[in-house]
Length: 435
Image 1 (tube, rainbow, N blue to C red):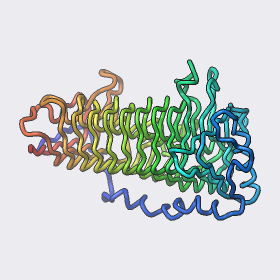
Image 2: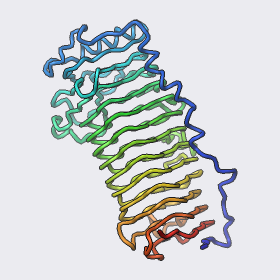
Image 3: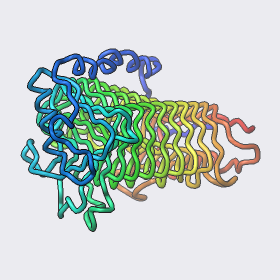
Image 4: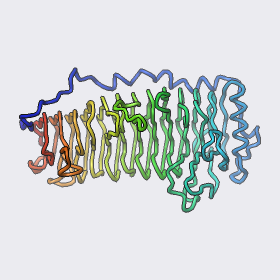
């Protein structure tokens, strides 16, 4: 066993016993989120949008009719607004929240539901965007609770927005702006060709979103992030398919940008069973705590399969486990000190830069029981890469354990752990198992 350590530095340790992070998250809020839409649907404001004047002919602007149905359901105490098969064209108008434009405003207690996502289509009209647009097809005003979207398609008509098709300031679905989301479900949706985000649920620092579920959706060809949640305490992002997002496919975020706090503001995310292809990064964990990314299948991403990143707040208690990652330059990338990251039992294949990369200051990481199959026999399995060589103070690698990982027989032994760091404290590298 090789041990890398500076004698004049006091080694750091993780402290406390290791726990399965999934037990912190799973089962805590599933009951609440699974019934959120049911609470809304039990009220008396249900109705088909055609009864409010929607034509679903792909020509008429159906936004005002759908909004009348939403508002009527909300005024009745909640309910389900139903989309029968057809194409509902919508246009942007000044948004209810006072910022930019939106086509529809979802209200608390209301679920918009189609009969199926192949035949029920909400489509943005051509040429709706201008420079610096902050526009959303489905938005909310302030706090949103007991609401949802289910079983229809949102076509963001990205190519039809001309030179503004690559803007990133808006979304197909953006809920919780200037407030938060509580008991909100987005499921069985097909969101494609959105300018900006595909699906975004957000809260604010001090007013966190809670009990969110984003499940069984298909998100494709967004100009920015596919699915994003920020400022939350309790979210499930499960069993979604995401293809060809221009930025990250799934992104969870919890930094206090204004207060610069070192404490993550977002907690408890389960990112599980998702199928991701052709995005920049598959799963991006940025300044979040008590989260798991497990059993995801990630292929052909341009930068990395999974990335852990720190801004101000410390990423803490993260588990990246049993994922299948292939065709990416880097399997799992980490940047910035953390309060504990476990990377275990993943299958990482055909990577070209590194199976695991530690960049900038990295601390408190355990890499164990993973299977690595690199693109060549000289591709680094674990790479400690400096971002700014010769910086003052020097970048450092602290409290890192690499052990029990499997590699192909015949892999260059000098490329198993490639370390550029000069300042190294309490880094233990065990045997790699050839198979």
